[in-house]
Every structure is written in C-alpha cells, then in structure tokens.
Amino acid sequence: MDSFKLTLQIARGDQRAFEVFYRDEYKKAVFYANQYVKDYELAEDIVQDSFAILWNKRESLDPGYPVQPYLYSIIRNNTINNLKRLTVGSRVKGNIASRERYVNLLALSDDTAQNVVASELNECITRTFGKLPQKISKSFIKSRILGMSYKEIADEEGTSVKVVEYHITQALKIFREKLKDFLIMFFF
Image (cartoon, rainbow, N blue to C red; front, top):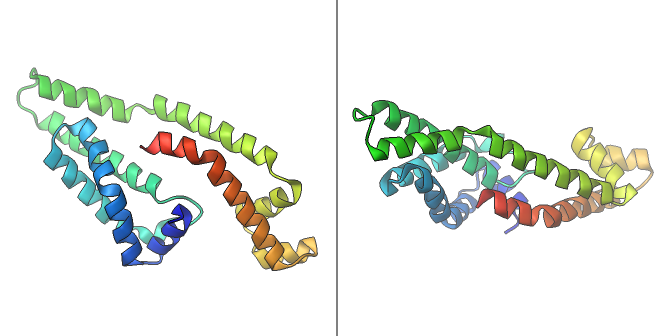
C-alpha cells in the first residue's frame, strides 16, 4: 500500500489501515528498540506504547509524509526515556549492563548522526526538486509550499484541476522514487 495513502487513512481513523501498518511494522520496530535497550520484553512494551501514542495522535499526521518516520520518532523518544529511567534507576552504576544502557542512551541522544542524515536528505530533495519539469515544479510549490488549493492553482495557471492534480501526483511520484532508497536506509 502507498505509504502516503496509508498515512491519510490512519489520520482519518481507519482502524484496518492501522492494523495493517501495525502488522507490517511491529517486528521491525521491536528489533529497532531492542538494539538499544537489550531487553526484548521492554522493547515490546516501548513499541506497544509507541503505537498507542501514534494512534492517539493520528489526527495530527500529515498525509504528505509517510507514517513510518512518525512511528520511529515516537519509538526513539520512548527508548530514550526508558534508557534514562534505567540508567538513573540502576543502583549498581559499575555493572556492564548499566554502562551499555548509558552508551546506548548517548547514541540515541546524539544529534550528530541525525544532522548528517538530515543534511543528506535535504540535498537529495533539493536535487530532485531541481530536476522536476517546470510546470510540475510550479504546481508543486503553489500547492505544498504556498498552500494553494488545486482549484486556485488551476485558475491562476489557466488550466484544469485535473492537470494540476496530475502535476502534483507526478511530483510526489518522482520524490517517492528518488527518496525511496534513502528512506529505507534511514528508517530500517
């Protein structure tokens, strides 16, 4: 299923779409959390809580973005909170498990890696945007950046709403294709 369509369905409260997303992402999400907490049951708890938070905040999802980054951001924050609690709550500060949790907390909290990834993503988006055909680029800017409706764009450009829809669809298709490998690498 298209990740943007999935985000829209979840944002609208479609429980079946959420269940499909849950089934598809659950094991990967637990694996991700477990890489840092090194406790499978705790990782499962973190992921369960994260899915619950995502569902409770579903109305704030932006259908212009895939839902996976939202989930993994929530998991990351929950993992950091749990690692802080475990690190602070540990009475034996010298043990290996406590030190490993502390190092994992630092790794998750380190914004350097995220800044590098964000910079690479920004470059990729800029390059992709620069390669869009002019008509598609104009429609995309007016829709996504200026917030104009398809009808407003069509009236301003002297074209039909269907043409504007086509331009936006083509722009999103190009972005999805160009960012596909990057997003898979970044989130999984």
